[in-house]
Length: 167
Image 1 (cartoon, rainbow, N blue to C red):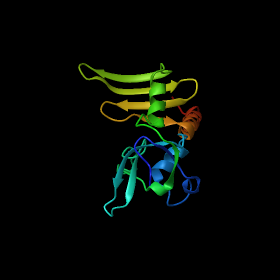
Image 2 (image 1 turned 45 degrees about the horizontal axis):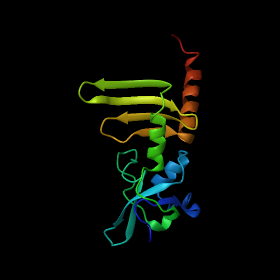
Image 3 (image 1 turned 180 degrees about the horizontal axis):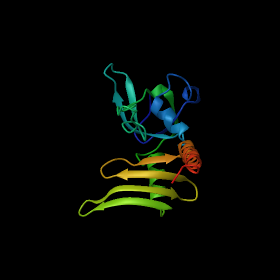
Image 4 (image 1 turned 90 degrees about the vertical axis):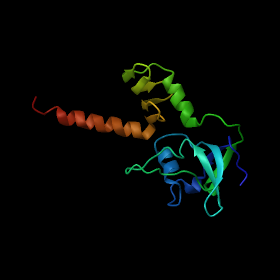
């Protein structure tokens, strides 16, 4: 393995739909995020096998029961896209890009001294559209791509079901 922190990797094509592919990476690709992951750290497993910690997926995505989906990945699942210095991941760049625009719709809770405790907004920077939730002290949650389309479809169906409901 010759990956270094800051390198940008992509999930190998043969692993994108394979059972042995890392669930968190595949979920991110299915959600419409780019196939780019930045090496945050190089570690070893308990067995002494190499493992790479990637941004934005490692130690971020949780399953339905709240457990982390991944903390590191086997390097053989990935290929080098480009060498780089440690930088923001593609996910962080998307979040920063959207967050710099004014939201179309916004809900927030401001607390004196602490500032923004909760921030929920619908963003569109002309290139990307997303719904973002930021909670003080936590990484932002972004719904974009296929997940956003699914959410819009669900909302539309729910609205149509409610049209005939008594008031």
